[in-house]
Image (cartoon, rainbow, N blue to C red; front, side, top):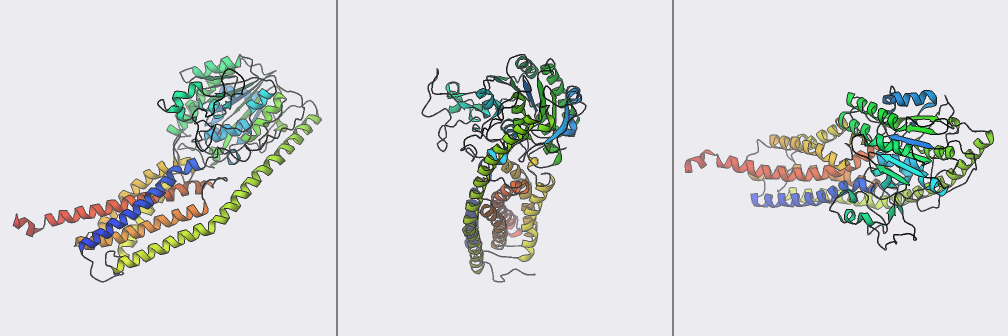
Amino acid sequence: MRAITSHPTAPTRQVVIASIVVVALGSLGAVKAGLAGADFMFDLEQVAPALVRAEPALPDPHTPRLSRRVFVVIIDGLRLDKSYELPFVDELRRRGVDTEAQSHYPSWSRPNYVSILTGVPPSASGVRTNHHSTRVELDSLMDRAKAAGLRSACATDYDVLPKLFLRKRAAQGDVAPREEPIGADEDTPGEVDIDAMERPLSEAAIRAPDANFQSPFDDARYAPWPGGFSEAGAEVAQGDAQLVVLLIGAVDSAGHAHGGASPDYRTAAEIADHALARALGRVDLSQDTIIVTADHGHTNRGGHGGVEPEVLTVPLVLAGAGIKPGATADDAHLIDIAPTVATLLGIPAPGHGLGHTLTELLAFPDPASITARRHADDQRLATNRSIVARAESAASSDVLQQRAWRIGLVGGGALLATFGAFMLVRRRVLRLDVRVLLVSVPAFFVVYYALIGAVGQGFSPSLLPAQGHLAATMAKYGLAAMVVQLCVSLWVLRTTRTLADRLATANGIAWVGLMFAMIPAGLAWAFFPPPYVTVPSPHALVLIPAVEVAVACAAVDVALTLVVEVIVFAARAWHRPEHTKKI
């Protein structure tokens, strides 16, 4: 099969100019797509979701308090099957309830810390990734405890938890409110960037000591040194806080580094269990309650974020006062923990929550208390579900209204690119050799998406390393695909003799390759435009940044291919016999 054009190629200078134009157009698309890919995970976040803009629904069931103190233990990254044969946790199982709970998608840490402590899943909380860096204003267990005159405490070896729930100081007090709080963002006045404070030279870090915010906990302890977690945990356990939250992060780190099926992961779980025993071994379970769970699990290879069973299914162990030994829950989720803890303490559930009290696990003094709690849950859920449904409906309507013109814009761009290719072919500066195109163009896409599917754990968000970024991970696969495509292009062009012919054919490869990259990226933009009020499905969560990164990689590949073609031609010309004779 011959090239679409059989006319002689235009002069070399014209073909080179066409190559420069192709590179320029590709670079423009690469910049736009690269920026979109880089912003994708940040676009998933919502600073002020619909629930935050609504008053908390706080029906008070007035049920009796079932526990003096409640300890909520979050073992970051501990999946269900690896939570067994841990002596301390197993002892709690024997004395209380051994059941399981489902984490929430996207199954990353920050989103599900929020799920546990507010009863709001990532889809409605606006906290969708570990890149969420603004404080969460949803009503929380700590807010309900404070409103009831109870104290709350936290001990952790991972310091993000208290920072997620920072609260503005009241107008009265020693520190006057500021017109522009520390770390304020122009788009979200009065906000603070909790991650910026981790950069020592940032303005937010320098000004942080005098920021007009306070911890959500009356006693918050961050102990990252060896032995620090069990030390800090024991101190808050011996204190007087009625609500205690303990977070340990070592298991998650081991899962990312070695995988959920590794001996190292198992060892980290055993060490965490021993640390909990040291911290909580003296808790009086006749008066107090311990709840052990996890924010998510891990795949065998390490990673989370998706909907794999080993990622979503986590332990839920309850023991002590107010717990019905031997009971089980059929459909427990992490968002059910907050109202259950509130019930144990005899206070209203967090008012923005979408979970229900696990009444089947609790030892109520009378049936009327169960009815009262369920009725209060129904009232709260009806209010909050309505708020979320209205926000999602409005967002969906807005997307549908804009989808037609977005698709039209993508289609128009494709037609314009096709017409541009036709004109370049007529001017003999671009050659569309079908044999070459069938071999060279698919090389990048086949390798790129095959790597995402295989190495990337089947197009799952769980492919991410700890605190990773989807676009950055895609870029690694794109780099490998670029190398393959470059080698294939050089191979298919090896028999082309003149520089003009080689560049014209390379222009054809570049043009078609860019179209195949840009059209899917355009369609992703048309069907899944930011901001994301609803969270894309797991496959879409991977494919959206993947197609955006593909454009950037394809553009870089175009430039590399054309540069290499010039170098190859120059090298061949230098070593021609006639050139050697002249020397």
